[in-house]
Length: 167
Image 1: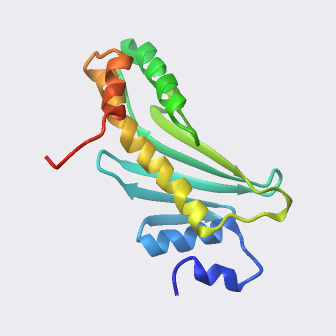
Image 2: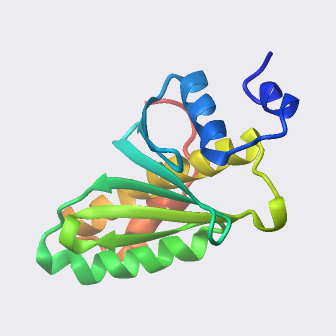
């Protein structure tokens, strides 16, 4: 039985239960911090990403936050913010921001499940995949802007260009 099939056999589908099963299936390190929240670590090519999913019964929203540490020099922050705007123009789901006090790059997404709707395992898996893939895609551009003193438009060419072959 696949990870998603077992959920269709029950009437009680809590989104965080679905996430926990997906995390176990993928062998991601995770911690169910409360009934309505789970935190995971997912290894990427560039970084290890901290992902938290939280369910809000009040507004029926499943929130995803993907973070990774980044401590850019103060002088590079205007370029980083411009780069973030360019990245967000290319993201159809979720958005990036930089939490300066915590020195964290953040990708956020909220899935509204109003009226008793539920998120399928495939939808949740896709949310997590979009967070990690987007972070991996734009990480080199953030690095170029912050530490190589590249203009955001030039740095974004790394995220836009298709890679062919293997290094």
